[in-house]
Length: 303
Image (cartoon, rainbow, N blue to C red; front, side):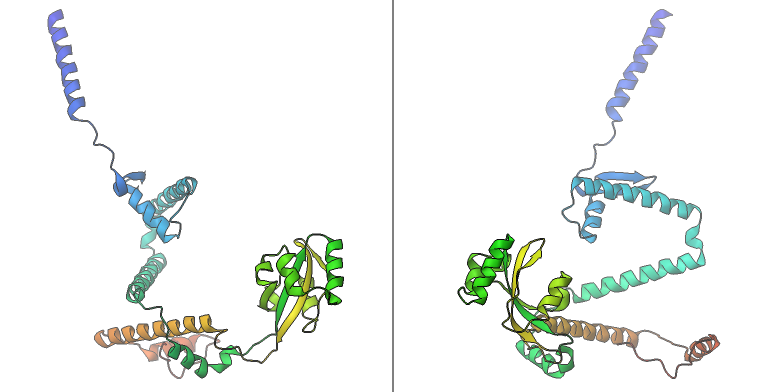
């Protein structure tokens, strides 16, 4: 009896060893298929995580950022699964909103794919044509000052420098290049043309916009040091910016017009092939029932 029991135990142990040897779990997935999180049957893989981070414009995320992202994914997935369990997706209003999100996302994805190969090049002829035909877009709405600056570390040095400058014993550009601690020293203190809002310090704003061209200010104390400012040019309200000044703006506007034109052509082609109907009478009746609404004469075409 004892031998039989021992034999049974040996068989059981042998079977267990065989099972353990033959029933080992598969090795963990490698690469993009490796699972980093799971909520019930829904998995988040390395590939999913990388795609999400790319979409969120975080391609170089730190380890802590990735961990936080995974935690947020788990939280969102738990809540979404509970919402499904409660049949919230069957609610008419929620279902309508989900369909709207899906529709808009697909439409934008199609447009991005259509326009991803659009050339960013804008010819000189296109630039000149746009500038000539849109003159009102480039009229200055506020004055601009061309400023130069010298920044010194202490008040006594700044006051002595100012005295030398107004007496004409020192050249402003030379001092800016050799003595100024400001980054503009490499441009001899030139800050270019600035609007009021380009100057963060309100007191400096008021000072320089009350100065005349060629005038040099007394040293102005700021957190960055003592500023000596000189107005070297002025552009008045109503003057027109040159084509070279607005070159980048025109490039963006031309590309936007090109994009709108391509989208319009695509939509017109799709409209021609599809069965599209707008019931204006029902729309007018709906608008008329609104207490503050005006009855429209017509429905303008979308641009």
